[in-house]
Length: 401
Image (cartoon, rainbow, N blue to C red; front, top):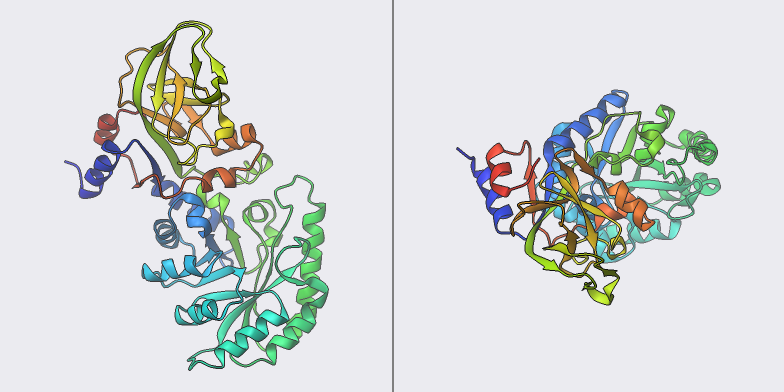
């Protein structure tokens, strides 16, 4: 008999033209692999910004914390509020810059922890907080620019920045951190140049603290590549979701992809030689063909740039996509696949029988990065969370797991 969760998952799949499956067992496996990779004194921050890279922030945050993560990282104040409204109490770092009075008030109210990037921003925080009855000093996380040239205080100004912040009421520096620009490169020269700058900052500012602040530097690539970059905490995003930041880092840990994207065949038709397929007829049949229309398109997250380049899995076979991918639909060549029916399930990303289709594959075909591919799948597609897919659900949904 199916559990309520399995029944709900089956109903969602049965009545959806396309959906995203989130494998929480894989997510927890990845967290545990990462935790075991770290020293016991090093905390794991699960980065769940951008709706957990398209995986669902609240669901992923809860599962990651349950598996051993201790902190959560987001980019914006609303992302942090969403987690608090879901009754998640773990510390949450806002990694983006915040300057507006409304956001600062919200940070204090929801007990979020902001990133501090400039003296001007620190002064605004202090002025806003001075108008509130605050029961605690707001933890601030001082970001140092050691070579990313994005957010952060320039590394050679860090000592003056710390002195300035320490003179302001209602603020205290809870951590000092930086972000690596090239940790996913096999050439570690720039990564270690940034590390040396970070070490210089630590040496300069440490005597100014009564109790040492938390130190963190490594992202996913830095975490996998170099244990000497781990410090007190690592901030892991991509690896959390089972995707390696670079091919040369695959040997470090065994990670499992968390996201699978599937859709249904909505129509099957025969076309004659010379028939153009989809907008602009970028594909024209050269022989009699059988075409299946699949209910997913670029508005759902499938890049239009994949048109005529990608293959999908259906009934144990690979089928090439043909014609321009449209907003809500795409077409595949199923001429050589017998016994297909409308309603059968197509796997676009993930595991299907012996076939594995990855975000890395799509990224390579479209000239982008796997991060962007994962983030494309947002709220238009229902998300179905699974721990272990039920054999009954697999059978009823029509796909081969």
